[in-house]
Length: 144
Image (cartoon, rainbow, N blue to C red; front, side, top):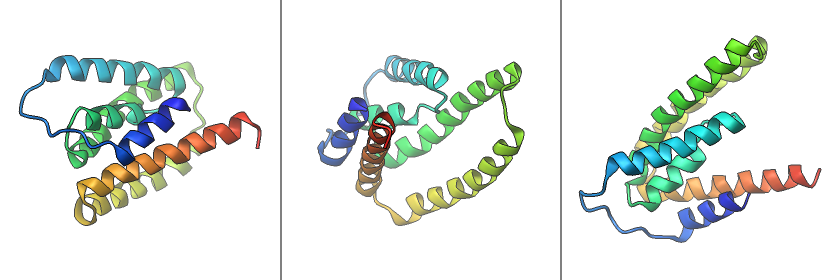
């Protein structure tokens, strides 16, 4: 929860310097992807909550981060899905009823972000969502 609050605050208030063409994408990408993949597999999440803030804090443009994270999370989630499927722990009815609306919502959200929002608005939206997830986590921890 503290990580979510920290990341949300950074998204809302921190202004990273623009990247100047350099940086070691191999090392940065491997570290961020490895940590996100490990935590995603451990917790059953896609890892976007780790990847997005990390890349934005490193100075990557928020709209490019959103599109990159979408593909990364797909593969991270797919590997977790295949593992759970192999273990026989899937509820196929639940999968269907969640997947179809998620695909429609993903398309609508991508369309909105790409055509209607600025990079600064995308960054702020990520921060607000992280605060909401942190609040939900706190409420669950307190059994409220």
